[in-house]
Image (spheres, helix red, strand yellow):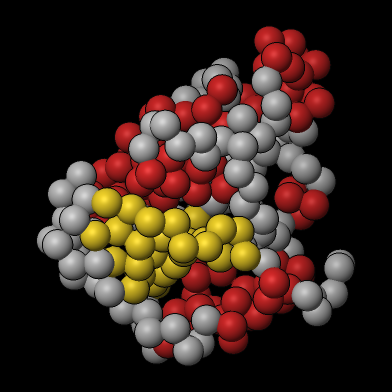
Length: 210
């Protein structure tokens, strides 16, 4: 992966919560808006990151990511740029189902843990490798844009793919956890990546649980 030789820090954010998140359902590319909790999380993220020197905010074009990104972008006087490569997994016939419902319909899925994104093979959907390919394309482009610090608002599956792509196939990112509204920081320079922080949710200590 080539870069312009300048360090780019990625502030990687998983979108705020939705009603389907609360129910433990796979959303995939279904276009679900933020819940009241998700809106509160987006507002807190905007306050917490208000003093970060962001050069740009880019998001998945799915509404839950755009709504999260908009709160952050407004605090910096920036527009929200969208990129379809940051969309969540296409989960095909899994979308709208819980893991237990998926395993009941496709028993072979039960051989893997729900968090093992690289093992997903949803009927009519994408594989982990397909998601990694589009994420690699995004990283290749974004490291050439010349930004020092770029906020990226996306989804859990994409974050798994992004970390695995940036840090290499020997790094097992599939067992990592990315909570709603979490912040993960990644620096890239000269084709080399460094993980600064992972799944930081300390800013939500006082968010009401509803």
